[in-house]
Image (cartoon, rainbow, N blue to C red; front, side, top):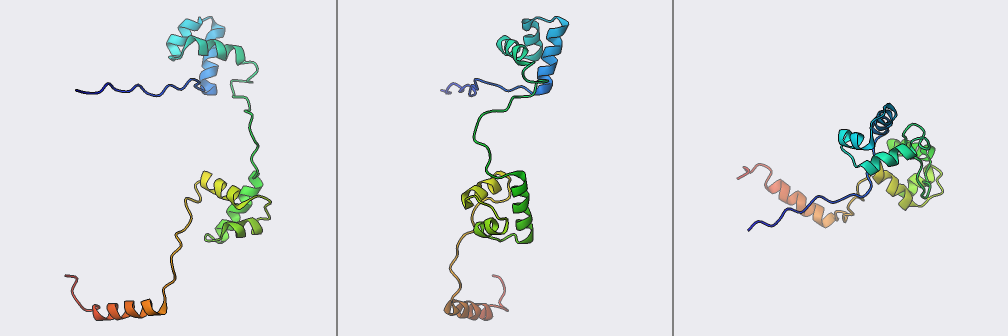
Length: 150
């Protein structure tokens, strides 16, 4: 017996583009009802009336600024980080902070690099090859250098 399909997750608030908001306002100003606009745009009537109420405050349908903590790194700081990385792609986060003269933690720099797709994960720490292991590898390679792959 097949299990019933789970419905898609319901997001309570959908943000519409400024273009869509402008279309709704234009339709409303022309004289279309909220029901007609809802059917035409495929969104709930309550959303239509909310967009109409907020339109003047939103200055052309653009979203208002949201509250929240401001970013620690300015655009200028981020450009300094990018210049530093361009000069030395394998530089450590501490050296980036030092070179770019930043007063933030290395974790903040790391988060920003991940957010911008520059850094994905830390490089794997591997033990250095000892002289003993290097000799063994060289002996093995020399013994099989002229042997067929099979």
